[in-house]
Length: 73
Image (cartoon, rainbow, N blue to C red; front, side, top):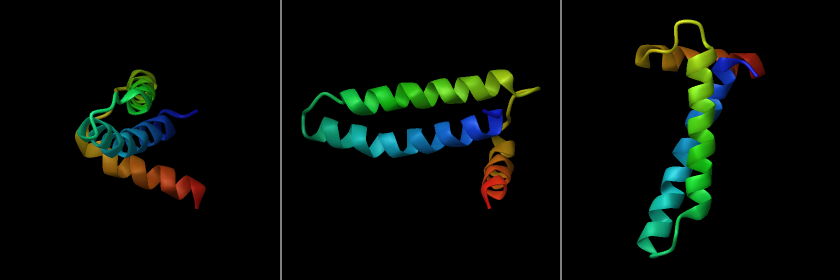
């Protein structure tokens, strides 16, 4: 898996798990499933940062998203 794809998938998974965690906390339930997905997302992001030469900057993320979407289109 390329670092760009890992970064995009990790950010998307993290984005989707935040509402799940907020819902579980507001219902006074333990956010087990969302905590696991956040750990998975964090692992993907760390993998992407460590394997990409030079790492990523915040300014690079929109270009990374465009490159990944362009690969699939």
